[in-house]
Image 1 (cartoon, rainbow, N blue to C red):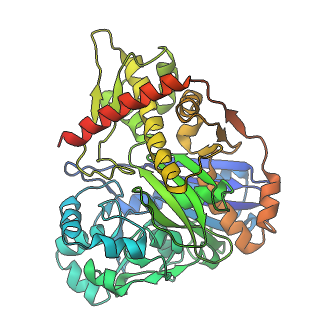
Image 2 (tube, one colour):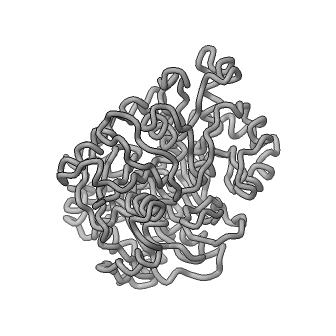
Image 3 (tube, rainbow, N blue to C red):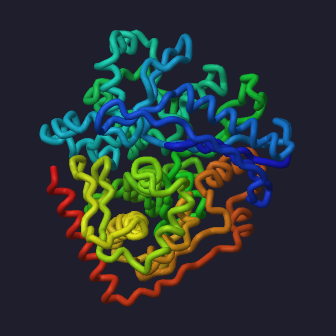
Length: 494
């Protein structure tokens, strides 16, 4: 068999990527799907569109490579993590649109839980903070607001899952209702110390246990595709939430190794090894994907708006026609001329965790142009990453020697150079920047023998690009201080 197929189901698009035995991309297919905003702070997807877009991409990728299902050794699935879907077991139909990880409709519920004193007990079991970002309050909202849903759930008629579970359910014609440990760790319902669903957390969030998927390892053969969607008989053998897949794809398999993914949001993860630990600096602890079928952990800093700020420039301000145009527009000016952009469109994630912060564009002058705004938007991504890395440094006491990067926005050389300048350490971009999909492929390929060992994968990696810092330390400190002032204003706005 010649390939491993990665199904990369993201927040704004579905992709399918075929990887060959050298870890090189043989074919890619991608399809954007619609975003729904029913109310301020609400973000939804159509679960059926998620499924159809993902499957059409898979078939298209195979066609581009001239491949057949028999040429595919395994499928690895990676996905937007905390997004919630609830569906009927009998029909496989969702009872409500998918509530996306960016959605803030449960902010009041989370605030009430925090004020009740539940935060410490929840964090000690899950490594997470109480925030609308995670899945549990979204599930509760659906059960409380869709007519008859709670009663049906109590009768065992409904299933809950993150997007990986939704895809696998349909790929296997309802035979497999599973998720892996990395996705389970993002729900606020999974005890990551014990590695199991937690009855006390289920009771706290009023989620019936009958709705839950079985939890499997990230690198494990869990079933075969049984549908007639062009992939019949192919093994499903890798599952990981997108950021854990990227950590694995970046070969960050040892404690202390870290990466940052520049996607719709930005996510910095640092592997901390086999022992559960809690952050003292507003990072979260999550389960890391492993090929060893054991619990491993990572600190994570989650930034809600990363590359999405470029989409906002495209779709809302309409100052660019395509996301790829932002680099040229930003490079048309030498600097932002004092403009600072805080893209807190859905609040602020790590290390601030302020659900009520507002987006802010300040420092505008009479001569401010589109180039300065575009450059400030790109710099905002890098500033947020620097905030998280500062928290990581405070946690570990050991500064990173380099930051490994991936994701769609990592191809932007202007952004990567500014990131290196701002951090004062090299930024390293791999030859294959689609390391989220590559990580899912690695997990599936290792489980099925397509690749003989993790060591063999490490030996194949070459061709990294390094961005060395060039900004003087004084200028870096001044820019950081200006950014922090803007963030404080954004937090105080509400």
